[in-house]
Amino acid sequence: MKQYRYKALTPDGLQASGVVEAIDEYDAAYKIKKTCPVLLEIKTVRETGNILTMDLGGDKINLKNLSVVCQQISITLKSGMPLAMCLEMIGNQTTDKKLRRILIKSAEDVSSGATLANSLERHGPGLPPTLIETIRAGEESGNVDQTFGQMAEYYEKAYKTVAKVKSALAYPTFVLIIAIIVVTIIMAFVIPVLTATFHELGGDLPLITQVLMGASEFCNRYWILILILILAAVIGWRTYTTKSLRGRMIRGKVQLKMPVLGKISQMSGAAEFANTMAMLLRSGLTVNRSLAITAKTMTNYLYQEEIGRVVGRIEEGRPLGECLRQVEDLPPTLVEMCAIGEETGELEGTLDVIGEFYANEADTATKKALARLEPTILVFLSLFAGFIVIAIYMPMFTMYDMM
Image 1: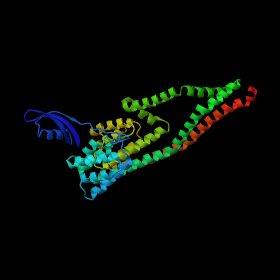
Image 2: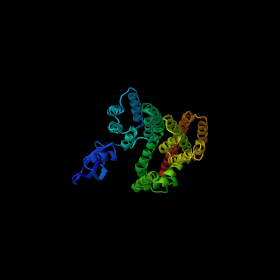
Image 3: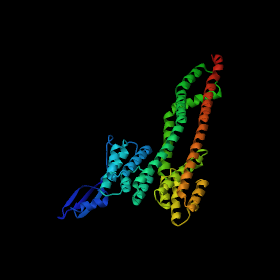
Image 4: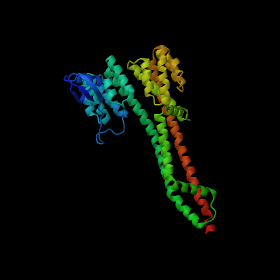
């Protein structure tokens, strides 16, 4: 339920004000007019909270917790429990604060006559569009319990995919962090001491040693400026590629065109498209509606825009395969399989198969890329370590001449 602050006139013509709880603005106006026929002003009361009660981490929902909650709701609804009671019970049981708040508030709305999809959309800004639209379709068909079961499987699969990538990246990331720390210590503390020693001894130093000493001196003198420039570049790039339409398009193109990683992004996008479409079609949504929702959920913004344009062509009556051929960087196999599935009437099953295929291909390609990345990092570190050792030891050979 939302809170609305209002100003109105009573039947006697006196001005009244206050706060009323309602499902939406129309419901609030209806309640107010029961006592104050003339409504002058109405606006939503913004919810505020302190650091002890607020949700940390933004609106993003944990996929694992979402999968578990969907599974619990599906099982509970199949047992015959009313929807509002089910939402309240599971909301009180879950340890995820965001999901608890969403479920409890949605239970209040549902008990007041609101639809579940609208309630979740209102109270869960971080919930995926696929969940809300699929539940809306489930409510229309009367299969909400089955819908939640399908969503549980879908988000469990999505969570496992994310977990695989994180696990694969853990070791290379750890090695890279350790390397940066070691290099920082050497450049900040070790090289300056050696530099002072060489200056005291005098004599001409090899070029490689001069380069190393110059780099160390520059980093020590301007480290704050370097740090500011790096942070500014990172923040600027992230802001440009998230807030700007052109920036999001550029980021999407870069993700798909990069060597090695571009191919992985393309296969991951194909798997994401096929799995989402299959799940939405299975829930009873039409092809054009499924495409519109899938476009919103695609990770790559370039895919979002181009798949979104396909919806209009589908509504004009064009075949799905023909429309998808105009989407840049979608794998040809995916497009042709969609066309075949549409012609044979087995689009949902075809999308399931092709989604599984591209998910496995993306996983295999990621493992191969990481298998190549680890030795590349080690070789780079070895070369850098060798450079430092040579730069330090070359003057040592002539040290006795300097003394």
